[in-house]
Image (cartoon, rainbow, N blue to C red; front, side):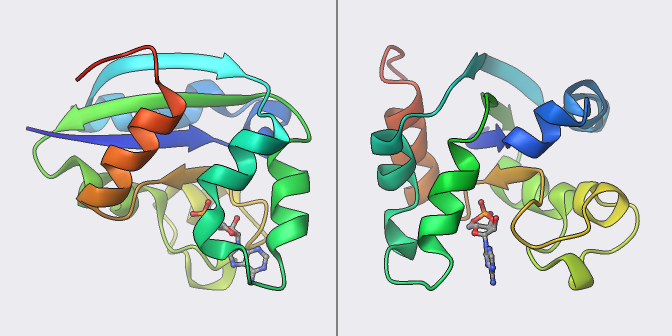
Length: 136
Ligand code: CMP
């Protein structure tokens, strides 16, 4: 079994898509191990996106992610990291295929509804960063 970190971004909450998105993960058979809604602080946003610090869109990304509440969760299942990224679809809006979360609901690359860990190292780091109260 593998664990992955998933965040439903402020656009998912504002657009009322939280239930529809979570339903897709559950219907696939992934198990929700932890889930919380929170307002992201600038500090947490900067730590979460530290690998993008030098990108031109970094400041805008931090502003977006702190613009309203998000839903953070830990999902578990066989190959959960790869599976969740397949369900989410490509990061770039124009590459996200219909049938994926982004392909069906997102129009832009920044407001792309969901974030998911891209490797076991990032899953470990992100779970520890977002759920420090849990010990796995
Ligand atoms: P995410 O999977 O959370 O990882 C980094 C985020 O940066 C990405 O989703 C997008 O929200 C955002 N992002 C990536 N590329 C761009 C871009 N070219 N312009 C604006 N935002 C981007």
